[in-house]
Image 1: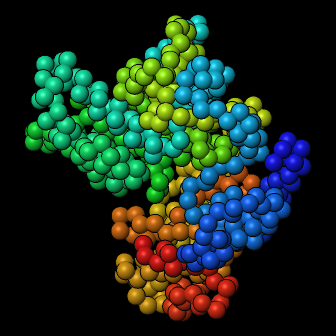
Image 2 (image 1 turned 135 degrees about the vertical axis):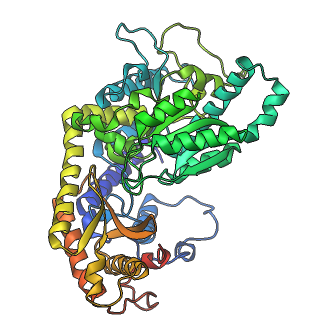
Image 3 (image 1 turned 60 degrees about the horizontal axis):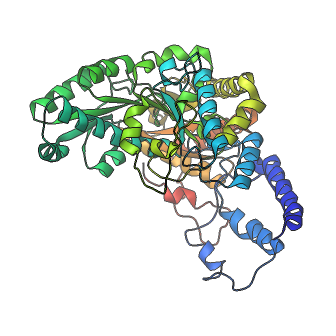
Length: 520
């Protein structure tokens, strides 16, 4: 394909993208295909000779599109949002145009410097403490700074490695522990998470081979200072070495917030690295009214927020800030003769390869820069507040209906609810098993219909329906559709009418999705 052909076909792709977003709500948000469907539609080896753009485009429409889950639909409520906006898409296009591998300043100075600038922009917009910014007020370099990672999950792996290395250095330099002894101590390292922490926390601990202590959350689904203190003291008495704790600002299940000041107290007293996972709800900090909820966040060692969740930026773009980058660079930095460094005392000369696990990195700052410039701070705040308003609207309507109960008060854009047990009492058994089954059946009926896509979760043994609201191109009309669908199928559930669990192979109107999620 030459430039002239690219110009022609590229415009066709832009038209397809625009058409998709204008019509995505007309599509069923969940695919109606079964595992392996694509294998039967695509050849088992690559073509020997070139194929035309027209043929590729036709296959995208007829073979790929039917198997797509439409995360950008306003009727998608299955998981936390995956942002997409036109400014971000355009930024991604420019990034693809340059196609750099920006591992160091000299590999592309503009990419490095823009990332430093944009991460400070975003940090200020979120109201983060100055210790997390790369530049001091006078323009000199600070110890802190931000870097764009792939995901919050990858960030957790990075920070737990950094925390481990910091503790190893502490034991060697401050406690006069010999290197051989330090190696024998590694299996005693223990990291702390709550039962509401994202699964990536435990995975990160597994990757580096340390112990993961999963602590019970309180009735408000939060990790408390008291619970953490007790666990740390028990482990120290058993000869273990606490070195890392993850607090969450906006958990996956309920959007609850851990006791951030209390966790900071325990971390400081025990020389533990304190990481805050604010992957979803951290975006709300662009609105000053949410910042009191993050009291104590300035005491963390690191903070991560996925801008690709709720900040209008296409996947992947996970923002990480550290209060002291020395530990990060010390842990991640590897010298090789083919990776030259530029000597400079300015904060703009950073080798971001030393701020992450991989060597290579995309020019992600460009799309975030486009979003922040073309929406402006006011537009970003309006985006967040709009979704919170929609979530509170749904919460209010569910309570007014009288047949639902809210499992956790709506604070951000997540609504977690279930059928009231009392409603089921009028039509038969309402023990916990029956209530759980009723909520699962409700979701199965909804997904079978295909107008919206939503899933259940389990909260301390109780099945609940979880509705994250955050589609960039959605509106209150989509929330009204969700409410209508909920109320429609609730009647079937509470009347104990049988719910079809296995899709008829000859009935293509039934989505296969409910069968993949038949258990809580």
